[in-house]
Image (cartoon, rainbow, N blue to C red; front, side, top):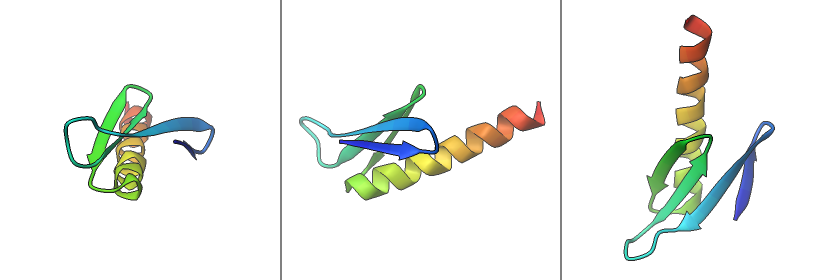
Length: 56
């Protein structure tokens, strides 16, 4: 499954041998019980990274 955050592609997939889903984007990996939760955690991670880059 593909989603987007702005112009960045987010790849969401079911984790084998585990419960839940993972989202992968720009060397970030997040996990959640649902695909929506994994996506929302990715949005938060990307926001945190962009703030860190702006402050440097």
